Each structure stands twice: as C-alpha cells, then as structure tokens.
Image 1 (cartoon, rainbow over the protein chains, first blue to last red):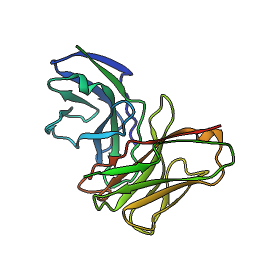
Image 2 (image 1 turned 60 degrees about the horizontal axis):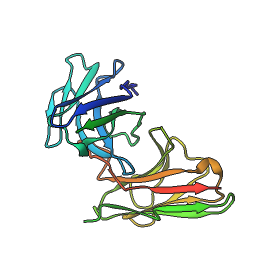
Image 3 (image 1 turned 120 degrees about the vertical axis):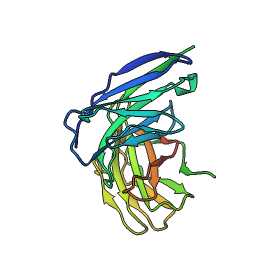
Image 4 (image 1 turned 60 degrees about the vertical axis):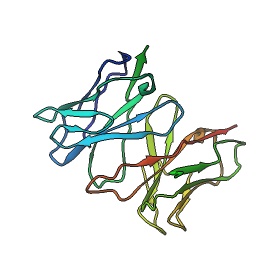
Length: 110
Length: 115
C-alpha cells in the first residue's frame, strides 16, 4: 500500500479556506485517495475520495495532481466545528483495511 | 436513526478479567470492523466481518476474539485482559468493501482501561 505523508498540524482562520496537503508519491494506478476526519473523542467521519479527477461534495473538495503523487483536501469556509484530525488514506478499493496514520491536526482559529 | 452504537462507552478492568464489547448497526450493512486507537496514533484494524457468520483477522488480532451471529451485531471479546489492551475501541460498518467505494461509518468508541 502507498504510504502517505501529512503535516502534523495546521492552523486556519475561521471563514477562510483550509487546504490540507497529502503526499503519496508511491501510489499505484488502482489506488484511491480517501479522506476521513476525527473530531475529538468521536469516531472518524468519511469526507471524500477520488482516483484521479478532482471531486467535490457538500463537505469538501479534493484536488489530485495530474501525476497523482499528491493531493489537497479543501474545506472552503472553515468553521470552529472543523477543528479535527484529518487522515489521508491511500488504498485499493474493495480492500477491507483502512490504514490510519497520525494525520494532520487542523485547528480553526476564531 | 442511531447508526453505529457501541456498548459500553467506558469500562475499567483488572488484569486477567474478561469482557465483551458490543457493536450494533441499524443500516443493514454487510461489513463490520473493530479498530483500536492508542494515544497519539491512528486506528489499527483488529478483526472484521464481511457478513453474518464470518470473521477475519486484521492488523492486530492477538488477544481478541470476535463473533458475528447476527448481521446487525459484531462482538469483540477479551478473554484475559492485559494492560497493553488499554485503548479506545471503535466499531465501524459499511455496505460492502466496494467497488464502488462504500464509506465506513464509525461509532463513538469504547474507552477501556486495564489496571
């Protein structure tokens, strides 16, 4: 499985866009990029996933570079409730295991 | 709609005691999972099930047993608790493993301390 690298922590001003990077330089052609987040003391929550095209849903946008070696999760208007640990996961779809690393701790500042 | 419910939410055990953690989901999901999360670390998969009556080992299965007698329930057992099993345990479920990708839905965890 491709390994992911994320910054340990980031800050973002409330109302601004939060851009969370993820490097996955060893990703293979059949591996997807998934994003989950974990708000303090809660179970992880699915955000978005993609293969090679950019994706958008009601929570966030996912931008994947053309060579697929990195991606960025964008929260367009961060709120205090977006303060959480964000996990970038690369995995073959259909596999049962999600490997959660240590993620990026995003703090949204008032 | 309750989603994924874990029972109990907190528990303190003595070394050598046994206990069972219960996970229940009301979304008619086929797949269910048990993870553990230690301080400052990500989640690690203990066991999972792809359907009623089936179970399989994950990344860290030693010291745990599981059963999936009913589709909506997934039980995690500790036969002889050890301090190294002090952790937060999360249960999750999904329709299938994909494709297309089916997100995993998580419960709010069981905080287990073993003295």
